[in-house]
Image (tube, rainbow, N blue to C red; front, side, top):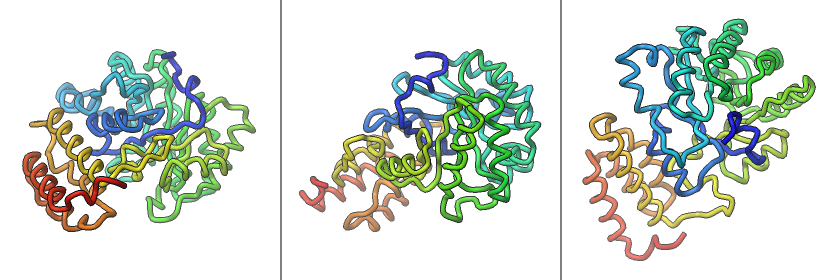
Amino acid sequence: MSKNFWKNLKRPIFALAPMEDVTDCAFREMFTKYGKPDVIYTEFVSTEGLMHPEGRKKLAIDLKFTQIQRPMVAQIWGANPDKFRAVAEYIASLGFDGIDINMGCPQSKEIQVGACAALIRDHDLAVKIIKATQKGAGGLPVSVKTRLGYSKLDEMEDWVKCLLGTGIAELTLHARTKQEMSKVPAHWDKIAEAVKIRDSVKSETLILGNGDVLSRQDSLDKIAMTGADGVMIGRAAFGNPWLFREDGYQPSVKERLTVMLEHAELFEQMFAGIKNFAIMKKHFKAYAGGFDGAAELRQQLMESKDLEETKIIVEKFLAGHGETFLTN
């Protein structure tokens, strides 16, 4: 794979979004097996934490990936350009294919330290961070994930031009402002505007849209509408590692629950004693939905304490429904 893997990807591009306490190595591995996207990201990782010896030991698990997950992008966040440069050097040494900078997370703890979406209001610092990351990345492509603006949609043009001016390889735009969080429908018309801005300044930066993408077909519709190079999908991926398949495959309920157990087993293998098994429950809610008896099953799964108890619950459920869930 070349240094800038983005240039080698076919269009349209489908990316699995980085999500905290979601896109760990086990989650990503399920997608590589059942419907691999074109690009996969780690959870977002603090540059401050990675620059501290004890913090680096703790966060190493968030940078774990397997070879079949490539191209693999590490997403980082922070507010200190010097630390971004040093962390970029470290990430490059781990064999990642790219580095992504989170400039869109709207959570208050990140905003308070001047990181993530706070950078939308500090273009000078944002540019310094990107340049420092590019310098430390050793030729790896550097990308940015951000939002349309901080509090107003009309902030987008200046913000996008600022980012494009740094020569980043790819720009993912969550089609809402920081203030909007996820409380309003995504403004996909603004993604189309961003593409026009990119073309008007003759930038080679790829643009991916993000927000309210429901399926692969919905992705194709949004790409056609906006002219974007691809999409990044987050919430719709929960409990659906088949999401990115081109054939539109829909698993039976039995298969969904069997894969859910496989996911839970892999999580336990990778993170036993490191991460709490309760993290899996958000995935259980997604896998176990949309069929007769799902509500009762979810309630039982929410009360399960470990992998073995989860297996027993699912096995009893499937046994009690006979052949009902063998087909779609």
